[in-house]
Image (tube, rainbow, N blue to C red):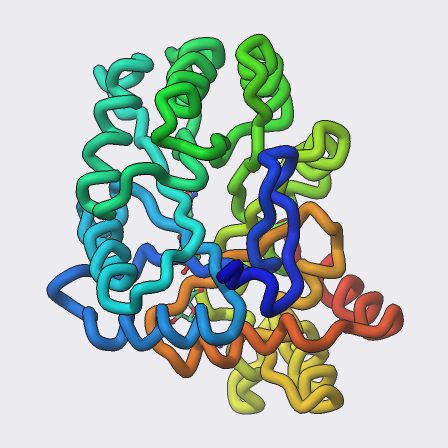
Length: 296
Ligand SMILES: NC(=O)c1ccc[n+]([C@@H]2O[C@H](COP(=O)([O-])OP(=O)(O)OC[C@H]3O[C@@H](n4cnc5c(N)ncnc54)[C@H](OP(=O)(O)O)[C@@H]3O)[C@@H](O)[C@H]2O)c1
């Protein structure tokens, strides 16, 4: 069954396949710590049409990947899985990337991942080196598509150019993007995603939970106007603030795929309901204005 068919999907750039328009971030998933809550979260997400799971070798020192492997084994349904290579010092060659991919696959108990990212640029590593490793990951059949994370517009272009020599598209750039952090709109990343048709996978889309909080009348703060707008618009749609914040990102550009972190089923249920409704143009503009006054 193609789980993504249950709700709105977005193409993963030019990778040739689509994922649910919302994914889930798993840096708080930790085998041995919150197994049952996470397994229930996984089931809730897949039942609700969210099939795009984002992890990394460094999340909880591999325990996030291990728990995703457990979830797939227990649930029986395989989500679309993205994981990442961390190019630390003395670990930057294509050989290191391919060895790290093998280790991730072992923890995930998969023969291939759907998307393999370089987690962040390493200052002394050429973009060609990363691209070479990523292209090899695709050629080996161990990664269906490849991407980068925390790369600038210029770095994206260079990696994409090198990948093109191997006929491999750059599928995604995963960057920090929320109503409180809109640098992707001004630093060229969103523009390059549009131009090259690369998915912009948005991490921290709820500003680590800050966008889900309501203003405290006893303690006025600079987020009050934005939180009030999110709350009031949410009420009009019988929706939570988190759904409004996620819907704003989805409406901002068709390349954006937010990956809110959730390790509790109730949070997953709340967030995935964002896929069932959309903002009006006036609502979008009100949130945009309240956020523009705050966002960096
Ligand atoms: N590529 C990178 O460099 C990078 C860096 C950072 C993060 N990431 C990825 O991005 C993902 C998202 O980041 P994040 O999880 O730190 O930040 P986030 O998505 O902005 O916020 C998640 C936090 O909000 C809570 N939450 C989720 N839904 C909620 C709701 N409906 N109501 C109230 N609280 C809610 C979660 O709680 P519970 O966990 O208790 O459900 C969690 O504490 C990560 O999991 C990771 O996969 C990538």
